[in-house]
Length: 408
Ligand code: AMP
Ligand code: MG
Image 1 (cartoon, protein in one colour):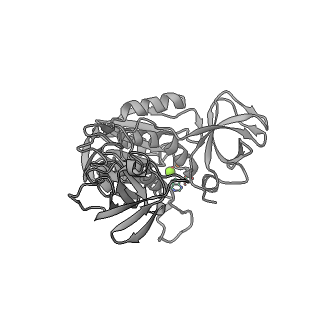
Image 2: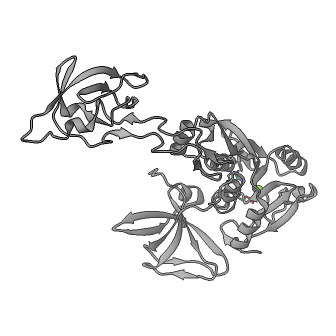
């Protein structure tokens, strides 16, 4: 039985970044950029006005003060955004200008409309002085032509999309999403719309794990539930191997009907490990087959999701080009005593609360709450080390923040 750090390292070593593909800009959200994005133009591409007002010469306003009367200027043209005037501003003149419009020749500043008073269509009174360059956004001020604005490896969020759009990139090169097959094994399982005959339970794993894959950014193929029979399991896994990653749940323990392991070995996959010194999720198995990864998650719904968080999510993220695989971690004060057996790392479902500058952790998984509910009612996963057998209330535990959104 190996430790989780070794298990995770083995998996991350086997998980290789997938090849880059070109996608539509909006499909690149949350993906990783596979090439540097350089600016083909200066941004903004021309000196433009930051305000609605008048493009003028700042020197015309230099003498305006409380004692000195404001100056009157002749309006020689109007310049809305998107248009272009060939008139030149000279001393004594002004061109009406809108936000985003090119600053016309001659002008060195813009007086905002609030600091002027109209006389008629051809004349305006400037009430306050302006500095040279005031309310002008200069060409290339934001981004310089040829500047690398986003490096390969950047994770694309909405502000990166804004940059890519400004650079004219309608298509974006990103590392592709892995295609992930999800199989649930077990004679006891029925699908959601099927009758619950005696001894049967509803399959939740293929749904929860499919949701986990989707939330990581993977493309999912939910193969569904398969009976604990060699032929059925084999056929399902062969079909699943069309994908980059195969995730099975159930059938990897030591039970008489746990055939998943034997089938996958028969397919000549390389068993990297089976069984990890952790709770829950001990009978977790992992294989590599060429460049494909096969995760044999335990059937217990809580254990399956813990294993997904601890191992599968980081692997999928690596395949998509990410370099940070871990959820944010905090040290949280345990609100009650916690007992465990030494010998296995425990992943404990935790409700983390933030008050008065401290994080507080209360366990959700216990006799009071089964694995399905405790996952849903928690927002973190505490890692209680292998050798520890008791944590006293008030001591700190390390918690991975799993669920960032407030759901309850
Ligand atoms: P196994 O790992 O196959 O021994 O299953 C362990 C436990 O998880 C058993 O109680 C199973 O009934 C349950 N289980 C297995 N697969 C699923 C599933 N897809 N959905 C919900 N529970 C499951
Ligand atoms: Mg089973």
